[in-house]
Length: 495
Image 1 (cartoon, rainbow, N blue to C red):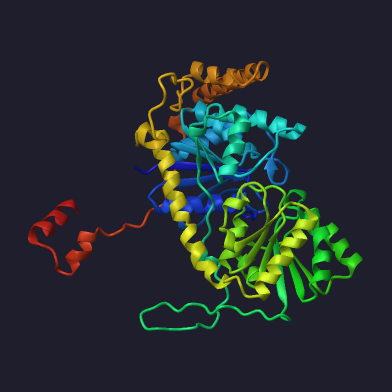
Image 2 (tube, helix red, strand yellow):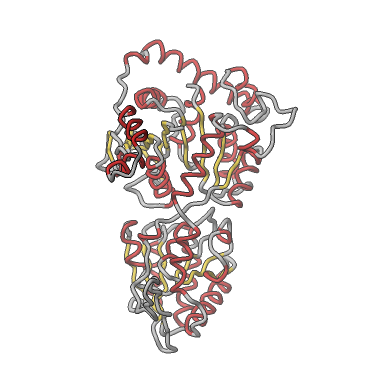
């Protein structure tokens, strides 16, 4: 059955990134499957109000104060009036939040449950447990996810991390990875070895001689967690050991200054090109210039850029952290510990493997195309929506019926009753549980006040984007005169 879905996150286009791309691609594929999808995010420079993107995807840019890395300032309650107005206008049934550091996402899940809507949360990141920032973030995540219907993670490592951080039932968490539009990340055209009639031409193996230049590509946000300090230490050693190697670095961030200082100290400006910010539609044009993709990240839940690089025919060198080992098969990657010496050694192995022509990178694109598809991601996400909405049974969704001890409060079918919600929040901690219950009560009272002050009857319902009418297969056959008289009569009657 079709659903009206609201994707909510602070992170969306025009800012580039994995979360932004995931939301856009998933939304467009869900629209193709017959659902109505809108996106709620904050206003970006030059983008305020309502925008329409491809395929009728509507984006609400809400003007809120941005405090750090495109994340809005947490307000908890001030977002509720405009959020309720959008939800009522668009007749939303499911609210799907993305990214645990998004204030819009966390607040939207709380308000949606108060309004009696089903909610889904997708986690795209990994967090620790020991430092003060992680402890605070994890406590807030536990608050938000105490009343969510289902959680989606982009890797199994991410699932384990989220289950531990928020004390969730593992059966309430599904793993649905990111994907890539393989057609947008094709390698350069190489001559073909054969072109037998009736068979698709295959790209010829790329031969790299012992003296040919090998290009290493790095496209990343230049932040500490992306391993840029590790990259700064490794590049001079890699170039010293391998004279016929050059490096292309794309991206922006606070570590760009450190990279430029490293180039000046070692006089590597002729071997290292820094491109600055790279738009997502230009990523392929940069990647096809290289032979190796280097990814020194210190933490990563999935790493969509690795799939994009492999699709472009690049051999991937990456750190063995987070969910990265789950992304690509071993013949496409060389793994390294997140240490300077091991990263230099792994890059040397990759260079040697390419020079010996042991790696068939020309086959990577077709293999990635078979492994990752946004259509498959949308289909699996739709199954989550069916599970939380009751369109499929709990036996089919979870694999078995809940235990007899699981009631409406603790069970996987979340009750909207206020007393049941308070029981779930109360279990979040001795002091935190009482504070969370107070927030939920205030949120509920604010909702009642809004319903009285601005009744739903006074909110105009937005018209849905007109969808293309797909011709019935019988109707297409009728135009060719291939149907029986009874079938033609049935088609006329339905028309």
